[in-house]
Length: 245
Image (cartoon, rainbow, N blue to C red; front, side, top):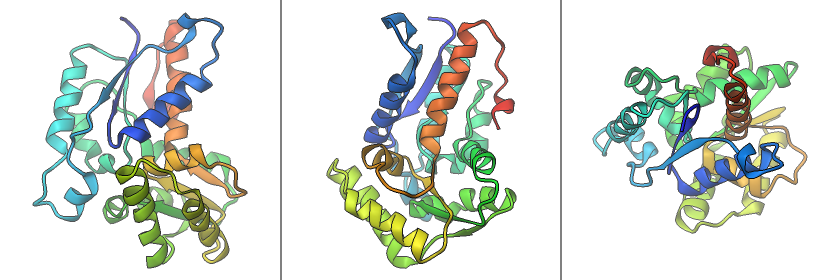
């Protein structure tokens, strides 16, 4: 197979499944051969990203992801995506491990948000404790010129519960919990746009998108970007990852 891309997933598996489902659903097709060419690495046993970020003595997710990237690099994909926001804590180290361009999901999400909602005043961020603790999204939001809110402790606890208790542990989507989180971020904290800083939240958005709130779904944006880049590859056009931001 030539002119393909690699998806590093399994963090978690339902989030990766959501990405693939949207990728296939949004690809314009009239026959089998119209679908995209890609390789999925569903590395479900990668250590928990948040646990390591909050306590560096816990098993690191960096070595297994470096191994994945280096293995896939031998196959020479045109680009790679990591379907986990929190894993971008080690983005510099991961990109340094391969010559293959690696899409920076948080940077792409906030760049897209700035273009889509240029007049927004306050951005809400809901994410894992690990993503909040590493400040990757907060820094991106501030550098883009926006104020931001993380809500209160109850919201952060509810987000963590939705991600871990409902989706990761039970494989279930709690739509009421998700809607309540968005509603409180909008009504109580004055957020014009809410960034979904976790791929489990992207899964929640896919399953429960019937709400009135503006959200920036990093995984959904990466889906559209993957389709755009792969379509250019098929046409023989040279792709430049730096131009997507």
